[in-house]
Amino acid sequence: MTDAAIRTFLVRASTLLLTLAAIATVVGQPAVHATLQPASQRKAEPQLALKDSTGRTISLTDYRGKVVLLDFWATWCTGCKKEIPWFSEFEKAYGARGFAVVGVSMDESGWSVVKPFLAENHLPYPILLGDGPTAQRFGIETLPDTFLIDRQARVAAAYRAGLVDKKDVEANIKALLSER
Image (cartoon, rainbow, N blue to C red; front, side, top):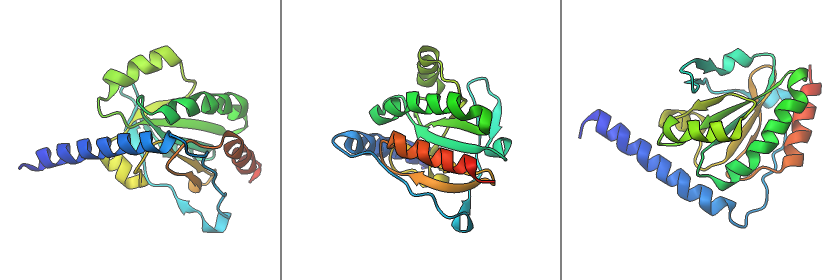
């Protein structure tokens, strides 16, 4: 097997596992809460530079000085689609205060499925296309996975393996926006 074939197999296997885990996670699971890490214990975000639907590369470094909600999602993920309107509300409510949402689609089929979804849903924030290495860098094992990143580009909270608790996310966003 060539290196390219092995990489393709690993990406497809990872996507299948993410799909199965997302289905299992959403069914009958309570919403996920996250505690904000004390500022002194926060670790730098993993680097991220991915393309949006226009082919423009967007990096998390573009958002330095802002509080960022980084959402890993997919068009087939029920919990992900439930969270997207909440994240859109947050973008509209807190954007002027230095808050931004960045979505990373983990759809294996890429833009062929993501672009129609975006055309139908008109999200107010950028969507990037992730891949296997992106999932590995952020430790994504299931979807949805959501991270709150503080103004100093450090991971302040991680909502792992499931649908977030909307009120909990909003409270953590407000707390991070009040930090200086």
